[in-house]
Image 1 (cartoon, rainbow, N blue to C red):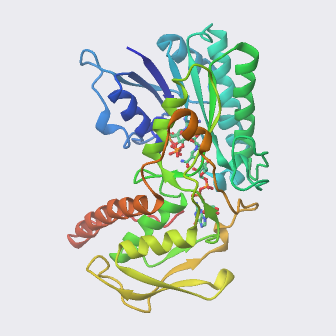
Image 2 (tube, helix red, strand yellow):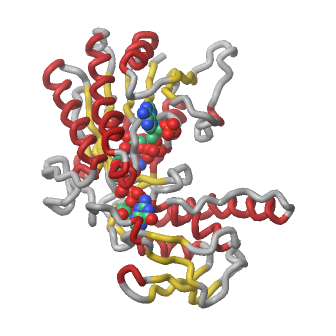
Length: 372
Ligand code: NDP
Ligand code: GDR
């Protein structure tokens, strides 16, 4: 039975990848951080009681900032595959916590690679690095492919640039089977609540049911190439099953604006929006409502406003990937479009909002965070 170790198993991708590998028959080990309250919601449904014989899903306490801890876990498991998905993954937060982001995202990757080498596992263990389209930053070529030069625009992207090159370096210097997946934005109902797509689907669902008054956004002209996380974790595994390690761009090849995503999400709630004004004074106003998904709203309500605090000190305005290499060499094609994914996310968030609304109706109020 193959063994995999996933850092970042409690995150969006980690949870889908763990499900995927369990279905493939792997023994799946994950590193989770100690937190003051439960942080395993995304993997609770696949958790197995460690007292049960032949449990194939195992969690270990650890942190990418802790070398001895990583080394010990690798020594105990001797995994066939390591998926390094753990990261301080929020671009805006990386401007607030640049040093921590570098420690986890850049040095953390080095710690893992060096532990593999130190333990003499470089001929056994294959390594996947969660690289990112943020490396392209101020884009030099449209669309972006494996050969497009990098120009990172945030402490997050600069940290990931180090992680990208140290992965290449360990492949070239020590013959490690190590690959970078240069993944463009991918989302799902499990996406963290402060990333833009989830902020929109969750925010609008809450507003539709009267749980929040308004959604405050940053740069809604930003363009992204959005795919579905389930499609993208499949590709992470495929990259480690080749004869020789290579780096791949994973994207859909289609780009939309944040504004379009807001329009879709509203439309999935039966709301037609009209954007009015410009710049920081721009708002989105309810023009028409169909169906019964948005009982708290009426035409004329302002439900989206711009708040400059969500602007970034340096923005990545446009990203569009060219996944030709992944298609030609690995036969990978994304199955879910951004439009379909938006609908799935709205449905999940509307269901959760209905649950909150019902609890509220019965006097069991729950806090609805407006942070994003
Ligand atoms: P998430 O933010 O959902 O998950 C990040 C994971 O990393 C969580 O499990 C988190 O733990 C863990 N983590 C954070 N800090 C540490 C640390 N110090 N030590 C150990 N683990 C830590 O990210 P995604 O699932 O969306 O992304 C997975 C990876 O892919 C990340 O590296 C991200 O940068 C990268 N990426 C993501 C893309 C996307 O569009 N989703 C695109 C390209 C790259 P906890 O739950 O405790 O916070
Ligand atoms: P990104 O994702 O920065 O591309 O990084 P995010 O969803 O945070 O932002 C996408 C774009 O939307 C704009 N935006 C806003 N973003 C947030 N979070 N909140 C807002 O209110 C808002 N308004 C507009 C942003 O400015 C940006 O242009 C994600 C992460 O998953 C990274 O880890 C990953 O590497 C990249 O995708 C690829």
